[in-house]
Image (cartoon, rainbow, N blue to C red; front, top):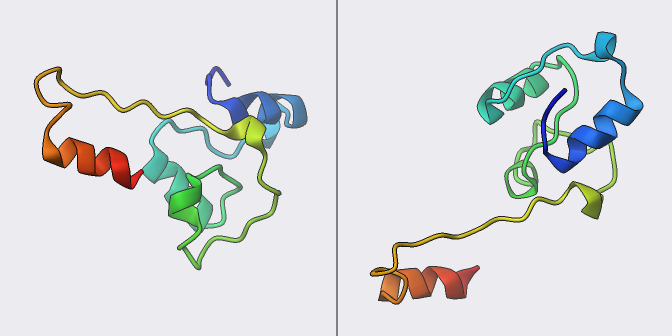
Amino acid sequence: MTSRLPYAAWMKQHLTNDQYAINASDPLAVARAVKEGIGIGFPAEHEAVDDSDLVRILPFSNEWSVPIWIVTHVDLHRTEKIQAFLSYI
């Protein structure tokens, strides 16, 4: 596994290559595989919390958090819509 995502290091430490049923970079493909019972996955917290088909099997870890950057065009970052979005988050 060559992913730079924080949970990839945990997986590399705890799993061997023969324990991987699927390796996909598409989050929708991973979500579908998990829902079909193929294995475990690391979905975004805000998506998984509302999905009754998913069951948390590991406790949350700050080590797996990923920073999110919000980038806007220089001419748009002071607009009302962008400011409302920034206030919301």
